[in-house]
Image (cartoon, rainbow, N blue to C red; front, top):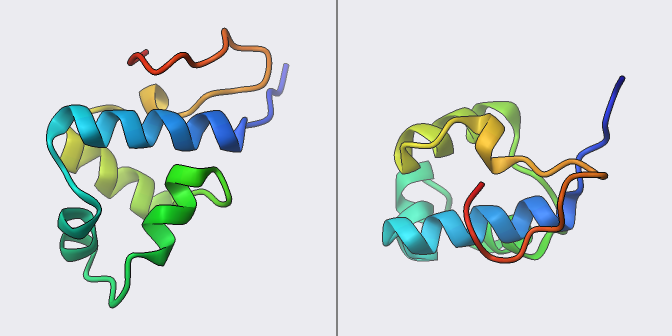
Amino acid sequence: MFNSIDVEATGKRIKYLCNESGFTVKDLQNEFGFECSQAIYKWFAGKGLPSLDSFLRLGLILGVPVEDMIVYYGDEPFDGRAA
């Protein structure tokens, strides 16, 4: 069965994992080489998802498998704790 990604909950989880790992938006902006931080804020707000390449890189930066960053519809609601 195919589950759709809950973009908003995934963004909250990514933000939580970044905060827990001590990474600021500025840190991530530098890690990804972005000129501005808008993309990262969109991820955190659930307004968009990282590309597959960015998901993989983010997982390496945070030391977390991509699967642990993604929340699917039907999963337990994300309450601010890691998976």
